[in-house]
Image (cartoon, rainbow, N blue to C red; front, side, top):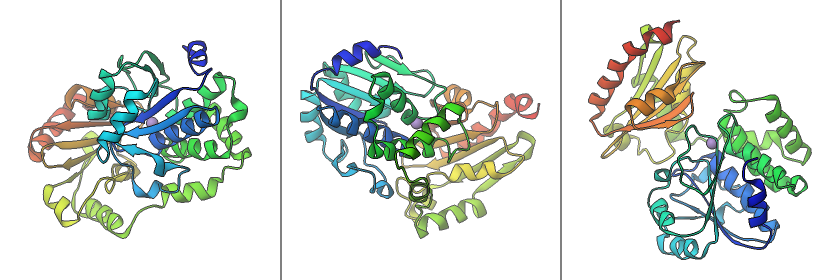
Amino acid sequence: MEYISEIRALLASPKDIIITSHRNPDGDALGASLALYHYLIQSGHQVQILFPSDYPDFFDWMPDIKRILDFDNSPDECKVIAERAQIAFYLDFNSIDRIDKLGELLDTLNMRKIMIDHHLYPEPAAEFIISDTTASSTCEMIFDFICALGDRKAINRTIGDCLYTGIVTDTGSFKYSTSPKLFRIVSELLELGVDDYELQDLIANNLNEKQLRLLGHCLDNRMEILPEFKTGIISLTKEDYATFDIQRGDTEGIVNYLLKLREIQVAAFFMEQPTIVKMSFRSKGDFSVHELARKHFKGGGHKNASGGSSFQSLSATLKRFKGLLPEYANELNH
Ligand SMILES: [Mn+2]
């Protein structure tokens, strides 16, 4: 693994370390951060996880998650801790703007910065960039990272629970980005005592009634299918946000339902927020939503899962998106 001997030397004596990950952390961001946290604490370091924004409540069960601080809620405390840190780990994001104001702060601070990430095209935001765009998840990379440091035996059930969470989240419960190597890692985690059934239940069956009704509304009233472009669209208006009292996290995963349609190759989910339209794209097979998001909607992520945004109105954004599809018609119909 790149830079591993330098990083091993850095970690050879106790250090003051911060770990951060992207805004609106998902299971991979949380799992990777907490797994690395537990590993570094065990190795005698002083460690604090700082996130740009709060995590969803349904991850409350994760070991020591309540010790995480977020910049939205406690900016002053985050600042004090960041200012005394000697090392920062940037996990599961590839560009400093993914951590907003926390990124602006960290950019001004002089410390050793290590990025570990699996998104496409990492930006030079850290001194050490460990990038593996073939990895299923940052959690898979944290497993490799700890092994590369020569500490495979330090991976215990607590760390295993965290790593498993990110792997399940980012592979959609082992539906994509899997590999023989990933299953070997997972089998090792199960041997440590990680409870596959219990964690899958905690991670996948976490909706409340409002969220399930919102999903019903999306599928019944807000879904549009464009068979000629093998594309499905769901869009939520500002009014929907008010009617359903939609909060952060409530729309998580809705985009994936479009891919349940056999003929659909591209899924696009539009969310009309106060000043911005946010987009979530998914695709099956070779079609790269990453390219589409990057080129037209200031976004990116992975080939089959990307995000984007637009400062136009929802209707103008939808119109622009549909207008782009003929450009991709050959790719979608081959
Ligand atoms: Mn990830």
